[in-house]
Amino acid sequence: QVQLVESGGGLVQAGGSLRLSCAASGRTFSSANMGWFRQAPGKEREFVAAISRSGGSTYYADSAKGRFTISRDSAKNTVYLQMNSLKPEDTAVYYCVADPDNTGWSYWGQGTQVTVSS
Image 1: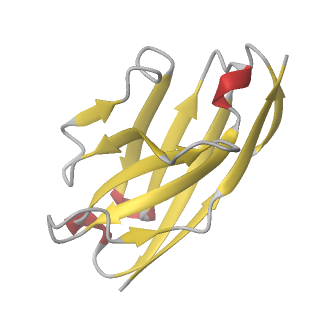
Image 2 (image 1 turned 60 degrees about the vertical axis):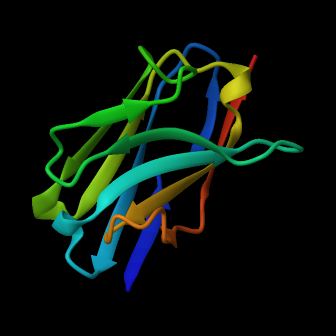
């Protein structure tokens, strides 16, 4: 089992920044690919970013490229999502996800709300 707890969401003005954190516990954090998804009101959940077990590879949705950065700290069992130049369309609940077995995003956090005002 992997438990994921997100934090760092909040209200920010357009153009501002936020850093989301996801603390992982349970199974070995270092063995899991990690990622972030988001879901805006009335929309489907969508992929935002992912990072490999080693941290050597990162992947981003087109909407996140150039503005968001995913990283991980194995010593702290934590993955981060640094979000810069935020836009109102980034408003959503952001979910941390884990894939420890290469079978997909098996584990999800409870989500943290990000609201960007115009």
